[in-house]
Length: 258
DNA sequence: GACGATGTTGGCAC
DNA sequence: GGTGCCAACATCGT
Image: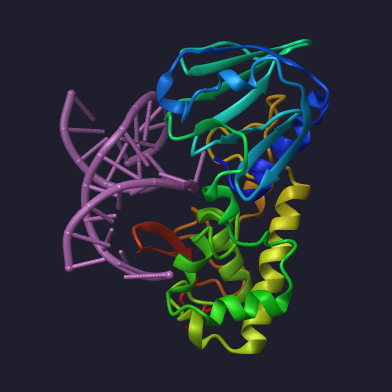
């Protein structure tokens, strides 16, 4: 489910929680809890923000971090199901953590942990010069680099494929060899596809919804992701699917060059 | 029913 | 710091 645009959409749908107090936390599945959440009990939520794919609740003391993994959801006043693993009772309303595959994680931290501090820059905030320098500091396949959260924070499989297609860059292109004009094109494509996806409230591929249960619509604007065999929107060549570092990768063999 | 694929990260070996 | 491979888990399509 959740890459940068989806997590951003969830965070925006949680803004009403600002000022709420966490009165009680019921944990039904320990697997999704990274550490002891007791310190968050009784704390007031000062703000809800996104960093990469993490949702960060800044509390009046410490932080509550939520990573949605592949199928995690935060639902306001939603229905409790067999996949509801944590229940946050607030002074007004209830926040549920639901996650069928249980790849997501919740944790409390006094200080932001290294896994958040060591994330790469936000793709929508990084400057071109920073981006270009980081690109050339590595010698790896472009698709792998875009998925590396220490390079840029928040891009996942969908938006990596979509950005590379929009920039005309092959997923196996070597990052260190990407020319400045092509790097500029990729930088722009990443920002454009993420901004458009946020505007569409994310991609609902299987069951992604925001905290109010609303789906996104960007899946209708995907040009390559899960479009294997469909004609390329630019040249008509059937879209190909291959594996790059074990991730399904969709691209046009004619439009995307190494 | 079996099999393979699915948006995530993390740990291992090399 | 790279890559490849596997792991966690449930659901869905063939």
